[in-house]
Length: 141
Image (tube, rainbow, N blue to C red):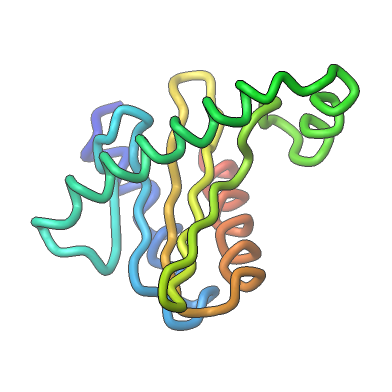
């Protein structure tokens, strides 16, 4: 499946985030190598930069978690928290001047996706909206 058709397929899921997450500033779905698939709230100049930054930040966060060398018991706990997600980083959250940014990985056999959302809503509200969007995307996979 080419990137245009992937973006068209998942664009309604990303657009639905605006109804789930109040004050959604932007959201995007990209590949781990920083290629944008679909987005809302970003202009043309921002899209490529945010896709690259989101995927890079998630990779750095995942490497930091991996470097902690968690015990097998702790790793099993991580796996059971979110079925289908390998042990490691599940969600990366950042906060700056009231803007909550949440990034997560959507695991799939043909290659993972990175989902990012930014909002001025509370962190819990953004996390719930992101998790619901991940579920919507996984239904389409």
